[in-house]
Image 1 (cartoon, one colour):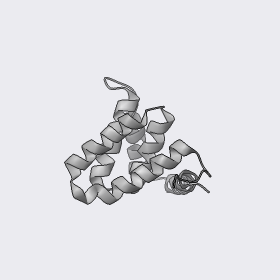
Image 2 (tube, rainbow, N blue to C red):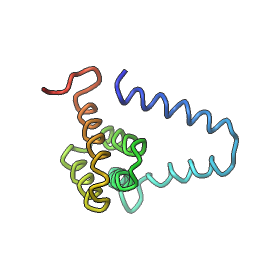
Image 3 (cartoon, one colour):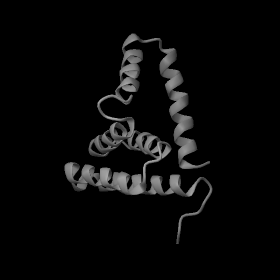
Length: 120
Protein backbone atom coordinates (compact mmCIF):
# COMPACT_ATOMS: atom_id res chain seq x y z
CA UNK A 1 0.00 0.00 0.00
CA UNK A 2 1.34 3.44 -0.90
CA UNK A 3 1.74 6.23 1.64
CA UNK A 4 -1.19 7.99 0.01
CA UNK A 5 -3.46 4.95 0.09
CA UNK A 6 -2.62 4.34 3.75
CA UNK A 7 -3.15 8.00 4.65
CA UNK A 8 -6.45 8.29 2.79
CA UNK A 9 -7.81 5.01 4.18
CA UNK A 10 -7.09 6.08 7.75
CA UNK A 11 -8.41 9.61 7.15
CA UNK A 12 -11.63 8.33 5.57
CA UNK A 13 -12.19 5.77 8.34
CA UNK A 14 -11.69 8.32 11.09
CA UNK A 15 -13.77 11.01 9.34
CA UNK A 16 -16.63 8.51 9.16
CA UNK A 17 -16.17 7.79 12.86
CA UNK A 18 -16.25 11.50 13.70
CA UNK A 19 -19.39 11.95 11.61
CA UNK A 20 -21.10 9.16 13.56
CA UNK A 21 -20.56 11.18 16.75
CA UNK A 22 -23.33 13.43 15.41
CA UNK A 23 -21.72 16.44 17.08
CA UNK A 24 -22.93 19.79 15.79
CA UNK A 25 -19.62 21.60 16.41
CA UNK A 26 -17.56 18.93 14.61
CA UNK A 27 -19.95 18.93 11.65
CA UNK A 28 -19.92 22.72 11.41
CA UNK A 29 -16.13 22.86 11.63
CA UNK A 30 -15.79 20.30 8.82
CA UNK A 31 -18.24 22.33 6.74
CA UNK A 32 -16.34 25.59 7.30
CA UNK A 33 -13.08 23.81 6.46
CA UNK A 34 -14.49 22.56 3.14
CA UNK A 35 -15.95 25.98 2.26
CA UNK A 36 -12.66 27.72 3.02
CA UNK A 37 -10.89 26.06 0.09
CA UNK A 38 -13.61 26.86 -2.47
CA UNK A 39 -12.67 29.42 -5.11
CA UNK A 40 -13.39 33.02 -4.25
CA UNK A 41 -11.12 36.05 -4.54
CA UNK A 42 -8.34 33.44 -4.39
CA UNK A 43 -8.53 30.34 -6.54
CA UNK A 44 -8.56 26.88 -4.97
CA UNK A 45 -4.93 25.99 -5.88
CA UNK A 46 -3.68 29.18 -4.19
CA UNK A 47 -5.74 28.44 -1.09
CA UNK A 48 -4.38 24.88 -0.99
CA UNK A 49 -0.80 26.21 -1.20
CA UNK A 50 -1.58 28.55 1.70
CA UNK A 51 -2.98 25.58 3.63
CA UNK A 52 0.15 23.58 2.82
CA UNK A 53 2.42 26.38 4.04
CA UNK A 54 0.43 26.84 7.26
CA UNK A 55 0.43 23.09 7.85
CA UNK A 56 4.20 22.97 7.54
CA UNK A 57 4.60 25.86 9.99
CA UNK A 58 2.19 24.15 12.41
CA UNK A 59 4.11 20.87 11.92
CA UNK A 60 1.02 18.78 11.15
CA UNK A 61 2.11 15.87 8.96
CA UNK A 62 -1.48 14.76 8.30
CA UNK A 63 -2.41 18.26 7.16
CA UNK A 64 0.73 18.47 5.01
CA UNK A 65 -0.17 15.18 3.31
CA UNK A 66 -3.76 16.27 2.78
CA UNK A 67 -2.72 19.52 1.10
CA UNK A 68 -0.01 17.77 -0.94
CA UNK A 69 -2.67 15.39 -2.25
CA UNK A 70 -4.89 18.33 -3.15
CA UNK A 71 -2.22 20.40 -4.93
CA UNK A 72 -0.98 17.31 -6.76
CA UNK A 73 -4.54 16.42 -7.85
CA UNK A 74 -5.09 20.03 -8.95
CA UNK A 75 -2.07 19.69 -11.25
CA UNK A 76 0.28 22.13 -9.60
CA UNK A 77 3.89 21.79 -10.71
CA UNK A 78 6.53 20.64 -8.23
CA UNK A 79 8.29 24.00 -8.49
CA UNK A 80 5.21 25.84 -7.19
CA UNK A 81 4.81 23.34 -4.36
CA UNK A 82 8.49 23.62 -3.46
CA UNK A 83 8.17 27.42 -3.32
CA UNK A 84 5.23 27.14 -0.91
CA UNK A 85 7.25 24.72 1.23
CA UNK A 86 10.17 27.16 1.22
CA UNK A 87 7.90 29.90 2.57
CA UNK A 88 6.85 27.53 5.35
CA UNK A 89 10.48 26.81 6.14
CA UNK A 90 11.35 30.50 6.37
CA UNK A 91 8.32 31.28 8.55
CA UNK A 92 8.61 28.16 10.72
CA UNK A 93 12.37 27.94 11.00
CA UNK A 94 14.61 24.93 11.32
CA UNK A 95 12.14 23.05 13.53
CA UNK A 96 10.03 22.33 10.43
CA UNK A 97 12.90 20.60 8.58
CA UNK A 98 11.84 17.05 9.63
CA UNK A 99 8.33 17.80 8.32
CA UNK A 100 9.81 19.29 5.15
CA UNK A 101 11.79 16.09 4.58
CA UNK A 102 8.66 13.95 4.98
CA UNK A 103 6.69 16.32 2.75
CA UNK A 104 9.23 16.08 -0.08
CA UNK A 105 9.41 12.29 0.28
CA UNK A 106 5.61 12.09 0.10
CA UNK A 107 5.47 14.44 -2.89
CA UNK A 108 8.15 12.40 -4.64
CA UNK A 109 5.98 9.30 -4.23
CA UNK A 110 2.91 11.14 -5.55
CA UNK A 111 4.86 12.19 -8.63
CA UNK A 112 6.37 8.72 -9.23
CA UNK A 113 3.11 6.91 -8.68
CA UNK A 114 2.37 4.14 -6.19
CA UNK A 115 4.59 1.09 -6.20
CA UNK A 116 7.47 2.85 -7.98
CA UNK A 117 10.81 2.67 -6.22
CA UNK A 118 12.56 5.94 -5.37
CA UNK A 119 15.65 6.80 -7.35
CA UNK A 120 18.92 5.48 -5.94
